[in-house]
Structures are given as structure tokens and as C-alpha cells.
Image (cartoon, rainbow, N blue to C red; front, top):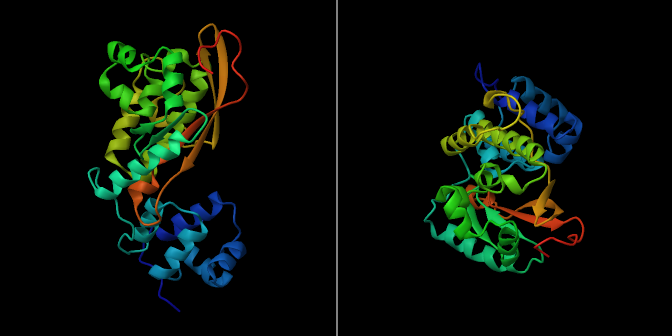
Length: 271
């Protein structure tokens, strides 16, 4: 039997937490990873040490992102297995280039963002929606700093961004910042923490102080209610992943589609 993990190892705690979050029993996870339930139990209490292969199998069965698999490997004493491409990396440029025709083929407004919510591309329908909201590029440049229009989190929450046009803004703010809080805590990325601090300091952000925001997940479907002209329109924000299995940066790319929940009512300026 493999020896016990070093005292204070984070691996057993991380494994238990991820299994609980996926609502899997030890038996179910053991079956999915071709481990015995007894061995999995020993891993979870720190009485056995995992191999690198076992951690990778666990990460796959637990549906962890490449970043989270790296953290699980690190907690078990192994080097990261997944790389992060630099912003100017050709792979990243190729991924963004591939995004554009995918977004163009959608019949609803859509935007692609990276792991820090920076906007990578939008489709024509998204441009139409922004103009309908009175948020064309010229209008935004006159009312908000340039950085606001380049980051979806800032654009949604800044008082001079999309915020005045969102009817259920407080609900959206709670969901978005709660998700960002979880992102920052799990990844320990300085850019996400900086983004969290910035949007948390915007005027009239609802709820508790920034360090008390719930660490919740952003659901796959979030309803946004926009003021469009003299009318209102509801959209479901569908968030999907586009990535490659061994590159953290491209794995973090999200396509967010604003799917109309109903046909816009008379008076709406987007259709």
C-alpha cells in the first residue's frame, strides 16, 4: 500500500470537497476511476498517497477544469500538467479567430470572453442589442472609461455601462459577483482579485461587503431583463465553454449567448 500523505497535505480535503460538490458517493467515484472504494476512502482520509495517474483520473471523473486539475495535482505534490498560453500566443490568436464564425452563425446576441471576463469577440446581433440599449461604442466612450467596454463584468455592473438598462440589476449583480468571488478564491489569480475589488467598489453594489459575498456558481441560464426603448425584453444568458483539453487559457473561453425568452414587445428597439 502506498504510504500516507505528508502531514498537512491539502489533497484529502480537496478530494472530499470536489466529490461532495459533484454529489457523488465514494462507490460511484471509485467505479468511474477504476479504483476500489477502500482505496478511495484511504485517499480521502490521507492514509494513502495518490499517484499522478490517479489524480488525473479523479480530475476527469469529477469534471474539473484544467486549472482545477492542476490545483489537485499540486495538492498531491505533483507538477502542473496543463499549460496557460500567453495573450500573444499563436494558439490564443487561432482560438479567437475560430470564435468569430461561430458567433456569426448564431441568431441571437453573443459575446466571447476569457477567464478574466475580457471581451474577445462579439457578433452582429450583440452589436444591434448594444445600439438598441443606447450603448454603441461612441456612447460608451463618452460616458465610461475605455476599460469598461472591454470587460463584460465591468460592462454589466458599472453605473455608466449596461447597468442602467438592466431591470433586474441587483439580482444579476449578486450572481455575477458571487461567481467572480468563487473564481478568485479557487484560482488565486491576481487579475481576478483585482477585478473583484474593482466591481465590488462600484457605487450602490447591493448586499454585504465584498469579503462576505457568497461563493456561488453562475448558473448555466441567467435571466436578464433589459429596457429596450419604451419596452422591456427578457433574455436567458446561456454560458458555454469553448476550449482545448490541455490549455488552460482556451479552456477558460466562454461564449455567452443572450437568447430572447419571448419576442420583443412593441416599442423595443431591438428585434
